[in-house]
Length: 481
Image 1: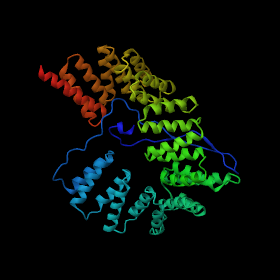
Image 2: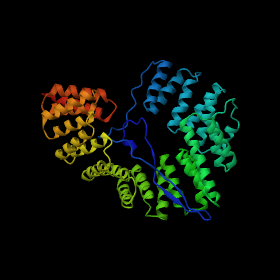
Image 3: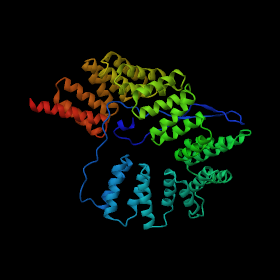
Image 4: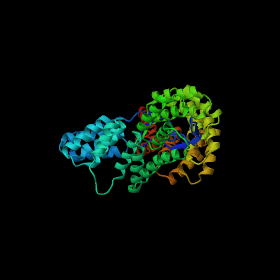
């Protein structure tokens, strides 16, 4: 579903403990957890196609290219940023900064070979770049070339003050190569040296796996490998998780939870076909487990197998998957994609019955009632609930105005939309809805102005796209009269 989102500044992936049980020969039962994907950012209307790259500006200086690249990078347009840094490097090939930026940009894009090429260029220009050496270690880990990563770590220049990141990766690779005493030593040293909360959290996750293994009586080494793979997943070291899980599953192919963990790692790397194969194997071992059904629903959704995704999400729901809120959000999106608008809005209503803690949860069902099922009374009822729940929110008044417009109560529509803009003068959706209201009333210039304002406020978003289209259609109509 990510490809339907016009602008992605970040993909929010959170972890949710669902729960599972591992049973091992010669070991006690040990409770652990699975970490599922929470739903994506709420989408509130038709989505734009991918944003096209702006026309290239000629005769820009090196500084201009770098500034433009930084502008794109900060806003998540990584390919555009990369292009600008390359152009800057072409202008001043002996300057190190473009290559440093390209290492970071290609790493974020998962173009690891290009990231590595640029890292090597950095070291040619200045061999004394410890950050770039650390970047190369991370790149080789992402490429699953763990031997080369370890060799680079072994030759990493010593520093007076221990670098927690270096110690962390030494610990990870020691764990991966089953040198567990060294892994514990490095990780404990990293824990002492770290001042980064995220890094400290990841260190703690790996150490917890060792601690849990230590509490288990007569546990097998294979169990430790799966505990470490689970912790690698939690620490977002998915390539390492895959490496360990392949070893585990070669020896014990009947481990349902091992296949789920493998599928989860592939899912996070957006290798959906591999994820599907792993989850299907888990499903063949236990077809009633709702966690497997949930992940099959996620994977089929990413592969745009919408009907299959619906089947598995409903199976997970019927088998007691929690939280139900996650399932209903996915089902609402899926029914919309399959043009079953009534089921889509019903699923959104289920979301609101469970939780009304986010004003944006009201937006899409109001839109569906107005534009697809043509039930403006139901849209208004939801908008009134939103206004009671969020009385100080501009979006609440936007929803009220939008719904009253659908009811053709123009006075209340305009009053509420203007109230929305009093609370938030930058709410593009309110200007867009005002434009539609004015256009229906044949107040053409006011409509054009409102559409223009909506576009100016959201020129790269879906509202801006809709406003531009409405503006151009109305302008063409007025000019032809």
